[in-house]
Figure: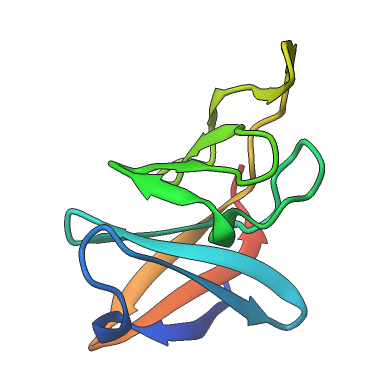
Length: 112
């Protein structure tokens, strides 16, 4: 696996998220209970920026149509909604994360 530094762990307090771009890939990194996670920043519904969404308890909500994803796994936990229509979405891509000192590193190959 080839890991790339994407941030310093001091940049993310518990419950915070941050969008980073590495080698042209948009990644959303999150700190949940002191553990760090990385998923694709793109909603699988219409490509909305998950980094602009709301993060509550490990669940990120897409600001476009409300699709929900678990930032720990990239798995969808709620479909998108437009008016009264529910639209099925796919799981989001997740990336392996490791910490070296205070550096947060991500493997740019999706693990999901």
